[in-house]
Length: 282
Ligand code: C2E
Ligand code: MG
Ligand code: MG
Ligand code: MG
Image (cartoon, rainbow, N blue to C red):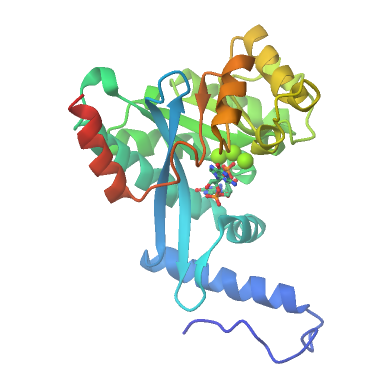
């Protein structure tokens, strides 16, 4: 039975829980059912391109959940619930396994020099899990994906406890997996970690891309991030590129890779497979 979302209790339940807490608990139950049955969960793939010629560099794997009665639920809504309750570990494992198997399969259909990577989001909570590194390494081995084709995206909040993050990220990095800092520039952590952690890529948050209007003031953060990346020899990806003007300004600032609706929305696996046929014949 799928839980209901209106309790009829008005502003709160007799046990003192708020309407929002009850709704979150119901959503959590339904998410557990989805995980157990595999029904309603899927992964979409958004291309990351080289800005220079818009060729494919890789895909970011993004989780999608279609709820049986509510329809599509945004990850912005269900990921925080999954993080609070701990089911994010299982959910994360599901996405990682799914995306690695899928991309390993796609790699077979393109020539060696057209190989691309897959970027998977890791929850900040995953890094506190002692087994996370073993799980990732087992998953890519089983899927047959080369470590060099996997990027793990973590937000700055995953790095606030360096005692946990540094050993885990170091082992992943030694295995050949690249680490990207997602939504870079929006977090609260110290920039010092960038010199201490095995970080490879900074993903400029889309809020700094949408600010761009050709004036130096509004480009200040985007410019600071690209300078920092150059000094530390890190790659960059600009997120949320929606217009040609933004793309041109990012190139002028020194960005080489971008992701956003201008290039492509996140695509279903079938749509990606169809596009790869075109790419591999070039
Ligand atoms: P994120 O990792 O920063 O992912 C990028 C988000 O920006 C995606 O939203 C993507 O659809 C959206 N986006 C891409 N291009 C554009 C654009 O040009 N304009 C605008 N307005 N948006 C764009 P999505 O898929 O809704 O995911 C939201 C967030 O949920 C992700 O942000 C990530 O933090 C989290 N998330 C999604 N999938 C997973 C997952 O498998 N595991 C974990 N732990 N978190 C996930
Ligand atoms: Mg991401
Ligand atoms: Mg991001
Ligand atoms: Mg973002």
